[in-house]
Amino acid sequence: MTYWKDKVAVVTGASQGFGKVLAQQLIDQGCHVVLAARDQQKLSAAATQLDADGKQTFCVPTDVTNDDDVVQLLDEVQQKYGKLDALFNIAGVSSRGLVCDTSIDEFLCSYDLNVLSAVRCIQAAKPLLEASQGHIVNMGSLASKSAAKFMGPYATSKFALAGLNHQLRLEMANAGIHVMLVCPGPIAREDAGTRYTLQTTDLPDTASKPGAGVKLKTIDPQTLAERVLKGCEKRQTEIVVPGKARLLFAIAQLSGAWGDWVLRRFTSS
Image 1 (tube, rainbow, N blue to C red):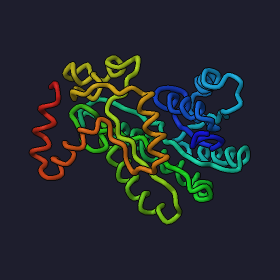
Image 2: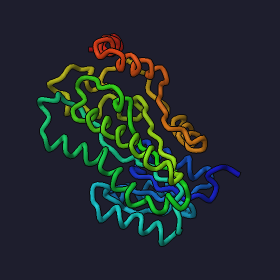
Image 3: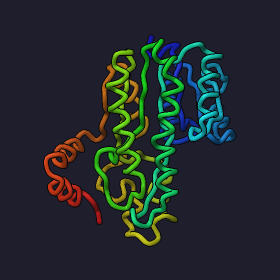
Image 4: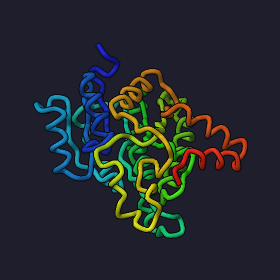
């Protein structure tokens, strides 16, 4: 019997990408997974692919930037299962651009989807997670710790998510709720290298590459999902992949100039 057998988890951003991969891992380990995403058609297609007989999944179309949608999501979890063991805040958005060329509206949209969506879900899920002494997992990035050029509003929002995660970790400790931040480098995907083409026409070619040109190997999403679930079992506070990135973070804390020098050495432009 696995740790996740008969537990209940909510995964936002579950219709594609890493959210979908993580949902599959949970299903394979016997977990009941509530799949949440904005696009109902994509969500239904993902559910059919992940769990053809529908025994372990429950789809709730949800726009995590909408307060009412998030409240409805957790109400439906309560009504169907009566409990919640884990909340995986995977929904998010990445981007490219120069800070001074990025509109305030773009910053607000990024902050809403990458930070406030997690706040909404956590606030709505808190009573159920207190009862189970369950898990909150927030999907950060290496950009939660170190900003690179050409990332538009992405690093700003992911830094904010890291701050949110730290504060939550302290505030939730007495309730027995485990809070973990996941900070991966670029995750392998089919459209890597082309997804930012329209956003980078006036930027160096490297800006459209995974990690905005930072020299890193892409991460296998299956392996990362396994690490995330094991991290929950061990109640880790943070996962950073690749682990060597921690050295850059430590150097940057000692000296911003040294950190910038190291980052430039590992960036293509």
